[in-house]
View 1 (cartoon, rainbow, N blue to C red):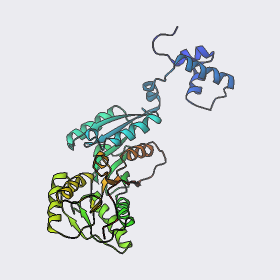
View 2 (view 1 turned 90 degrees about the vertical axis):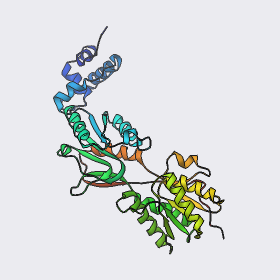
View 3 (view 1 turned 90 degrees about the horizontal axis):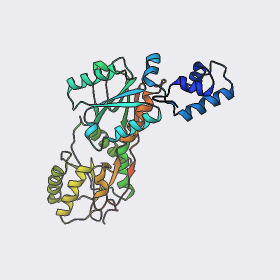
View 4 (view 1 turned 45 degrees about the horizontal axis):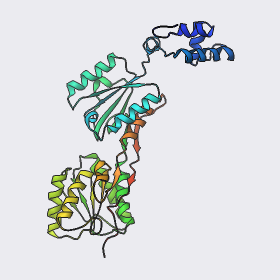
Length: 336
């Protein structure tokens, strides 16, 4: 009876072949003539013995460790953006890879140490991820190594990056209101900050979709991206009395504050005011009525990033990932 870790030699002896023959069969090599009978015996012996290859020994021979380093700012502890981790690890497992995950909390010294520690462990490549989409500078320690940027971009070089298609998402949000009959009285809730990548592109998409339909944004309710500021801003906006038929909130947290302000004003969603937002967080389904929201594709970002990193024929450039609209109950035709 075999004890301890089953070796390739154990498999070869059980199958009645040489160790070299067993190795060629189990690694899929075809540069040695092996009979079908011998190949079947080797595979059967491997199954019966529950043989698992020694990946450490293989890495010493091939310089491939089948490991990936994921370096992020705060996505590991952010429940929502943590979907990037779930998508990347699930995809890596299907490709027989493992992922080392390190979080920097934005500290450059921590980042440098994490990258070096992963390099010391021989990772085959890196995913460099950000919690929110923005332009970054690739750490110097990563230069010369395979890297795919996740939810971030860089200028000055043709890096491989996967980011959400925020422009198309803005179009989708506007089209949801246009399809319900809204034309006038559509207001955006959120910051008009040109440096915020998502906000800028979402607004550009909204403007284009409305312009194509002969409409335009009636105004902006300025508020930072949290419920309390949104509540105060929307409450003041509604009290001032401008005609509004719909609100496009730049994220779900803003929508939560807007919902509370609408209720405080004695109005109802969607009968008096339609609302659409972005992110499709848990808030979207918890709110009543449930919120129509454009989903952030974090799982898909992680999945595609791993596929690109492991693709030997990958080319540089940005891949845009679709952000699907999740229709719910917060949109209705405008009141006459």
